[in-house]
Length: 308
Image 1 (cartoon, rainbow, N blue to C red):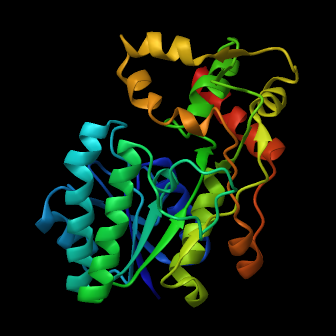
Image 2: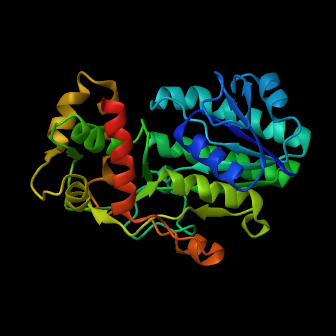
């Protein structure tokens, strides 16, 4: 039986990936700074991904390693930590002959007027996007010069049960669960794709186990984009029961709140259409995304439990 190791196993994407692999009968280890929060049957490995020896030990014996770790949402933190994490992962995978599955976002594409596909050029238009593009270049160099076997699974902005770092969860679902008005950032009239976290986990499990996926970048299943107003209506049942946080309000907030400052350079994703096309994955593997109505309902159930 193939052994899989999920690095960042306590994060929402890591947990969903572990669940999908377990459902397929695989042996799974979860790597994090603290003991695994996943279900029974998972081996917990405590490791520091910034420490090369620790990563080599964590990956030992795995045929496939999934890099799903999250780094604090800060350009400074990303520049400090991501290159080291990626290099440690590459070295560990090469040391053990392990295949790497890397969970990525769309920042490296930068501003684009067309729907994002796997063929969209890498043209970052932000500091964070440039960092993500540099990680892709590092992977490509390792594959070309050292024989690294890697595959990429890429998602749009995500949401889902317990997705604590999701903007939609934080500003919409959590607010609704607390009896507050939901908030959409910038412009609720624009279409904006969102990927459901259990769908990400299912897709990464496919990417790590199906030979047809090997060595490519894949957009994981994501339902056709709705507008912000349409998402808010699904979450509240009311077209009008929400607030919109304008660019001016976010700029003002950026004077006092670090998260607001960090979000400003990515505002282009919310002030123009942000459309993510996953048709290649869906047609190749016969897997369709969860409808937003169902995904939002499941995420709301979880938010309500956490709000109690």
